[in-house]
Every structure is written in C-alpha cells, then in structure tokens.
Image (cartoon, rainbow, N blue to C red):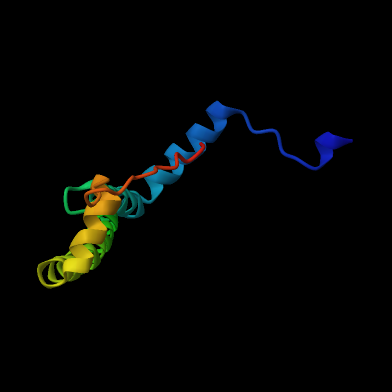
Length: 114
C-alpha cells in the first residue's frame, strides 16, 4: 500500500532525466552554472561576505576593548591626581598595598579563606 503514494525513481534514471533537461535548455544551464560560480565568489573570496562578517565581528571586539581601556585610563589618571596632591591618599595606598606602618604601629593582616 505504501508503494501507491511514492514513485520509485532509480538514481540512473534521475541522472538521465537531469542531463536530458540540461541538454534541452542550454541557456538556463549555463546561467545556473554562472550564478553558482558568482555565489561561490561572493561568499568565499578575500573580499567576500564571510570574510566581511568575520572582520566586522573582530572590529566590534576591538571597539569594546578600546572603550574598556579608555575607562581604565581615566580611572588611573584620577588615581595619579589623587596621589600627587593628597598625603592621606598616599598613606592609605602605602598601607593597603605595601603593608607599611608608622613607627610604633603593629600591623595585623587577616588572611582571607578561599
């Protein structure tokens, strides 16, 4: 009963049918081959679509990196200004980063548990 709904085409008959159709309509066949080659060229050439998409993604990544670096630069410039003019900031940084203390002070460091 299943055989009633589907035609049984053998592969060699299908190829003969395609070849016969291509021989009848040579202009269409040449046009299809030409369009296929143009499509391949547009997709995979050095200036093709795939290359362009990859380069645009890379460009977006670099723009984000530049923005992040700009924010970091501004933060560091503010820190430099604070360190140049304020003795309290210098002392705070020396104590926190380098563990320095005044004479007679005892420094207790609490280790963080991981």
